[in-house]
Structures are given as structure tokens and as C-alpha cells.
Amino acid sequence: MLTEIEMLSMNRAGWNEVAEQFYEGTFADLKYGSYGPHESELHLLGDVASRRVLEVGCGSGHTLEYLANRGAEELWGIDISSKQLETARTVTAKFQIPIYFLESPMEEMRGIPSNHFDLAISIFALGWTVNLNKTVSNIYKSLKPGGVFVFTWEHPVYSLLNFEDGKLYFRLPYASEQVEKHDSWRSVPIVMTYRRMSTFINALISSGFVLDRVIEETRIPENDISSPEQWYSAEKARMMPPSFTIKCHKPNK
Image (cartoon, rainbow, N blue to C red; front, side):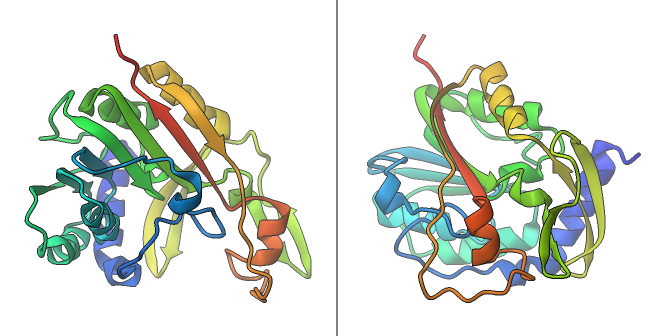
């Protein structure tokens, strides 16, 4: 059984190796997952102008770029991958607002100030944590009272759907939460943890968050002809939303 330190070390090395595969490019709207709705439809973040925002798992920095273009006052990005952060610094270098980057596991979040942020966001990153309760607690502490946390991750049921011999099937029972080591994820070894929806929700509640919205929706283009053999495909998305999004907040006390 791998320790948390061993899992983090493996994932850091893996992400540094494949970082260039995740250079998303500038986008005009924030998309909540493959086949998911957009921020322009959901309005989960509200007006980000003059707000301090933390992105957990900032990757290549394009979400931070999106937030800066909408008037954020101060931005912080944390990521485990030094290669990803190199790109993020380049992407956001044109902005005059304070933008800070920290290379740290989200389970530690060293150097992140407490009670500081109006908004925290994590787009397809939170599920990489090797200790969900610790990470969610860190995010809670970083927010001001009344601060909002919005994140999206792959839907736990979708994660179990495989396609073989013309049929979709479940590769594991839904209840079987477990750590899964993949020896060749994008040609590198990494570790991921399969978790149920209730595990994410209960981690938020245990940390003190109040849930505002839980979203399980798809937006499938009519002309999508993607093969079900692909991990993200229209056929699979019609059976089960590929992602879910949660908005919650830290209550005023």
C-alpha cells in the first residue's frame, strides 16, 4: 500500500512529464467539465471584479487568466507541478494585478493565507487529492466568512463506465471506494482515488461548508459523433453526466 508521500511524489513526477498535454489555451467562457455547462449559463462565480480568488490545482493558468480578464483584484494559484506553474506564470504575466503561485500539494497548501479569499475554485483538480478531508479543510480555512467554493470533477458513476465489445458496463461496484494505481496514464504512472459522490459532499459538510448547488448536467452537441471507445464521448454522456459541479460557502459566524 502506497503512503500519501509516495502517491504525491508519483503524481508530481507524472504531471511534470505530461504538463504540455494540458495546455488549454485562452477561453472566453469557463466550462465545467467535458460535456458540461458553462459559467455563462450557471453564474456560479458571480461578479469576480475586485475579489480575491484562489485556484486549487491551477495547472496551465488559463482559469486564472479568465478571472483576471473579468477584473479579479488578486489571484493565487497552487499546483503540485512545477512545469504547470511555469506555463501559468507565462500565461498571466501580462496582467498588472497581484498574482501569486505556490508549488505545493493541495493537502498541505503551504503559504496560503487564512480567512483571505472571497472565492476558491478548482476545475478538474480536487479529485486528485490523496487526502480529501485535509484538502477541503485547507480550502475552508483559506476563505473569508461568506466566501464561496466552486469545484468540478469527474462524476463518480461515469468513472466506472467502460466500453467493450459494443457495450457499456460498470468496471467496479459504485460502493467500492479505492486507491487505483495506473501504470500508464498518458504514458506515465500515477495514482488516483475513486470516491463516491457522498464522500465529496460529506467532506464539505464535515469541514463546515454549506452546500448551495449540486449540478449533474450535460450539454451534448447535436453533431457530436465521438466514438464510445473514447473516454469522453457523447454516447457515454447520454447515459451518465461525465462531471459534477458543486457550489458551497463558508458561513458567516
